[in-house]
Structure formats: C-alpha cells, structure tokens
Length: 356
Image 1 (tube, one colour):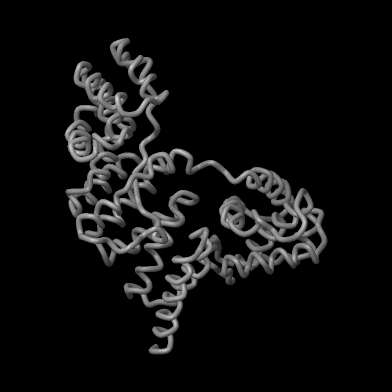
Image 2 (tube, helix red, strand yellow):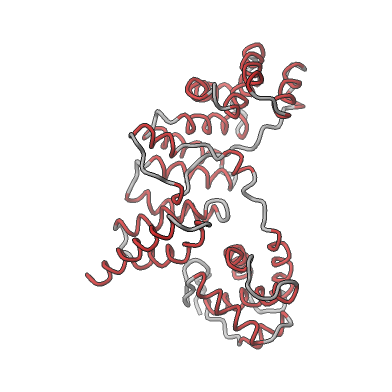
C-alpha cells in the first residue's frame, strides 16, 4: 500500500513538471488517467487527477469531464472552481438549468467573482429567456468589470433590452462603444434602435461559463487575485470550442465506413468516435506519411483499440481488412495509440461494460 502511494505521489510530481512545460496541456491526459486509477479514491493525488481531467476534457468531451468533476465534488463539495467546471460541462451539453444550479453553487463559495455572476446572468437571459432574473447578476458583474470588459457590457445591455429597459441598455452600450468599436456592438445598437424586437433578437454568443486550465494556473499574490484569475473569462474560447480538428472530419468518415463492416454495437461505435477525438491529440502531427493511407491506418487502429478494450473476438487482420490497410500498419498505429492513451483491457474510458 505504501509503495502504491509513493508511486502516485511521484506520478503527480511528473505531471506537475510536465504541465509547467508542455506546449499542449492535453499531452498529460494519459498520465492523468493513469494517476486516477493508481491513487486511492479521495486522496490528494486522486482529486488532483480528476480535477485536471475535468478541466482538460471539458471542451472535447463535456460528458466525461462532468463525471470527473462530480468525483471531485464528492470530496470538495464547496469548491467554486469545480462547480464552475461542471457548469461549463452542462452548458456545452445544453443542460442549461443544471448549469444555472452549478453556477449558483460556485457563487455561493466565491461571491466576489464577477465572471461567475456574468455567466449565470448570461445563461438566464440567452438560454432560458429570463432577462429580469438575469439583471441582478449581470449588474453585479458590470459594477466590477463593466468598464474593462466589453463582453460583460454587451451581455448586460442585451438583458436590459429584453427586460424592456431600452434607454438604460443604450447608455450601457454607448459607453462601451466609446472605448472599443466592434461589429457586434453595431449590430446590437441597431437592434436597440429598432426597439429590441423579440422576433429579431440580436444573437449574442451562446452561454459560455468559465474555468481556468490547470496548466495556466500560477500562484496568486493575494486570495482575491487568485479568485479573479480562476474566474477569468473564456467566453470566446468556448464559442469556438466545438470546432473540429481539420483531420477529424476525414477520420470520422473513414472510421464510420470501416465500423459498418465490423460486428460492433452502437455503444462500441460511439466509444470509437470518442477515442478518435482523443487520438487526434497525437495523430494530428504524425511523424511519418500523411494523407488518406495514414488516416485509414489511424481509423483501423481506433477500431481495433475498441476490440482490444472490450475483448471482442476479432483479429488484427480481420479489422485491417475492413479498412483496407496492412496488418503491419494497423499494428504500428495501434501501438502508438495504446501508449498515447495508456489503454488497458476493460479501460473504463472506452469499455461498454458488456457482459460476455
């Protein structure tokens, strides 16, 4: 038991060292998954792993990120950072009412964070159509950062207009436009001048809660500064969060064609697509050949990885034939994939838990 604890502590140190130097924080995902399995449930190392997994997975796989966040909340039920991450997960999943609940919990632990107030108000206004309920939260955020954040000013002006307070909305927007000109401000102003008609509502960006990636954290000079940094807005980042890697669309198409010839069920095919997204953090920059043949080999490796994880009685040659690649190509790419994602038989991330 002591040896296992020491291994977990050493692995955490390696992850922290890597996070401080990695160009792409997602490079540590395999190490974090390994730490989450190695460390005892509820230990500092286990909480550390699940918290960072939630942060790093939130935009590529918000459902899985939410699972990791919930595991942290079991041991840290009043951690505002974790509630904010869970709110982002639920927003990206379209569960806006739950996201509102999560933001209330985050604010309950960090009432001075203006970004939590902004995102809660923005959700209420844009996602749920509750502009009047949104105003107190947006007013709070605007009182702290309205002079420096055009995003908060635009959200506040929009909610004011929806609540029928057109002159106040125009004043807020006019002050913002004196500092920064933008097409969004101009479109919002035109909408206000038309009387803010609901059938032509100005399309503000979709609700986008905030969190800070673990790799971007730095010690704060004071507790207040740390709270503000934790809530720093990633509004524009989340708007573009679902943009796919340019190779992923091609990989998805090749994968779907090959999977159609394999005796895998719907859940297994869905896991394969999820794995393909994770695989792109490695295969988007392959050292060898690129192009169609390379994508086919990666797709075959992903399909065989599901076979490997779920103990499906298929050989590498049978899977390779469905993707029209050589067994050697599949074997090579699968070896890379298994190492990169730290895959194991029955891996909880991708297994469908079918009883055989």
